[in-house]
View: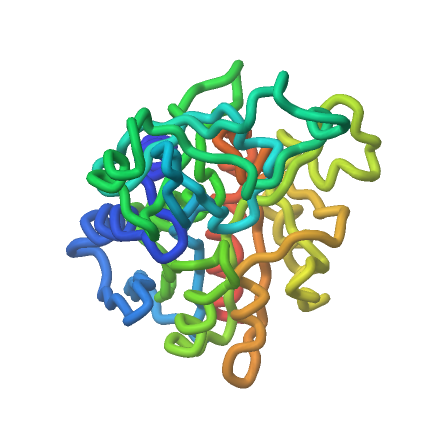
Length: 339
């Protein structure tokens, strides 16, 4: 699973530009599932299990990552841009990116600090005040390589940190994709549908279409969520803690989760000896927000990986939590398939 995660994290694919990720997933699914790709680009894979399922269960994870889109080119040859997905301006200045189909290297810059006036130098610059420098000599030079509407991506290697942690971009949500590919590779006990979704970061759009198509009885959303368990953060605000297992939410900004499913997850984790924890803050959202409202309604639960510095070039996750999330996904699938 870790090798798959590394490969997926090193691929580029912002919302609506998931082609490279999708192509890799389709290659991995070849001969293992009945696969369709819908008009939005969602990959919907039906996997036949060793036994027939009483209920239709859909597992989902989104393929897209946060990134940037080019909105203009200055006379000096610098690129104006905006965010695709929720990116805090504090994490972008000075970052190396790649731009466009040519994967041109560029650096996100701002006006030099010694040219700022008043409190300007003390404030985090809005993305509209930043630019991407690709080394172009002029607007005409830049336009030979880059077009308005091109995507730009954080550049970040996959690295092992200490004994248990890894660092990469796009852990949200290439991790969920890696879990599903691992489950498919190893085979499932019951029939299941695996949905690799597009455009989560800009409004749960792929999930809206896929849930309508699949029309599941139960849905298990595999995600990454904020872990603020770092120095200076009070315990009540840490959201979740790395190394303490899979995260299950009772509520976030897009979903009030089914109370019985929330309780079932903890009972099942206790029975299977799977480390599990509660997301302690009502914040964020994920594809569950669209899935649970689809059709006549879908019983939905989200299992999340604690992720530090999410939506940045250097997200950090714990391999022990990955193992717990993987085990939780399989246990929930087996439970909901026949309940």
